[in-house]
Length: 195
Image (cartoon, rainbow, N blue to C red; front, top):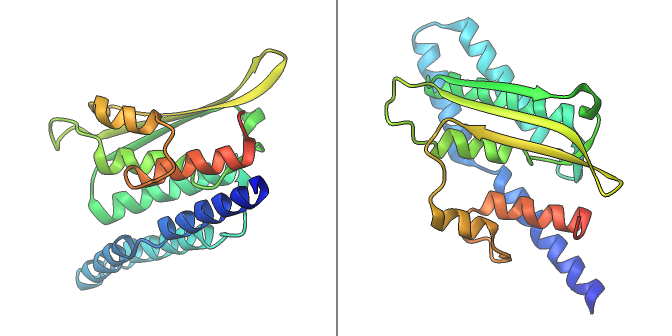
């Protein structure tokens, strides 16, 4: 029974993971931006955007992979930031502070991008003239004789409300709110157990 429940939980997490990838409004916004660039005859910008969209889709279509090297996730996040700048014109600055020794570490797909996307979507800065600043850091930590990968994503927004933090930090299996974060939590639990 426990094995069956674990299989069902894994299938649910994988299904939500796939659903998270299919964000038609994101691609429709990309096409709308391409149309505007075509109207302005901005061929260089069009080529960059088409390339970025292709990289984005190629990464997401690796659905059979549970983990990727941290280097690939970081490259995907860089591409995502470039897409956001192209598609929205918003000033987004992303600083990566990642120890070279951890770039080959296996991490769940979208484990960083999910939080970066939340920063892009929800960070409140008080003024549109203030650029969004995101910092992604990763380092190896040692505790109790074991090594752990510590990944942090921070931005210069006002932060989550207490209610949202309580929900994110709770043991939820529903995933009705904060779907991306809850999905990452479930996938990490499936991959790493209590660790």
